[in-house]
Image (cartoon, rainbow, N blue to C red; front, top):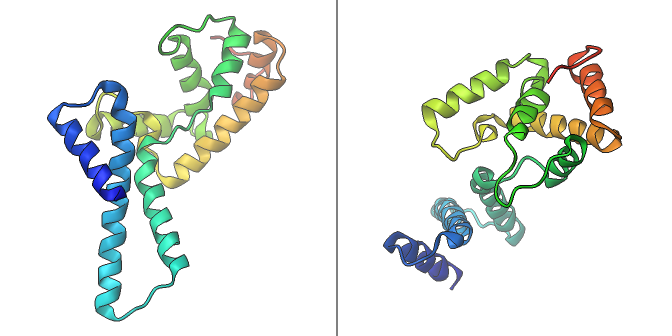
Length: 187
């Protein structure tokens, strides 16, 4: 029944019967359908080969495919990081979106120091996005699995620095010392 519901949601969306606010639900339905198709094909191959999988193997395979499909929609930046930046930079939360300053903070504090590459990883991911991506795609979607792990480590490091900093000046000093190996940072 779950597959039928997902197919109905995707079909309704294709006909234009759903509102834009339903986009997340449709995306989740597509993830489930994609993962089910992959798991189903794998199950068919195993059955043809005479392999009898256990319940745990089926669940593990399904989770693996769902995680693979969900990667596209996964958020890599914690809302807590943005809350800290609002606090430290004295920015007012807009009704929608985020302040333009966050773009530069994200590039300078997260992407450029990523893997101690001095911006090379960011440049490669950005070039891949421009070549293969669409307008709404995020840079992190164009990182490899290792790149995503490095990104998560970097985000955690910056979030830790932000949470212990009492002021913008203190935060930027820590950023300069920890990330850039410098004494000061000019934003």
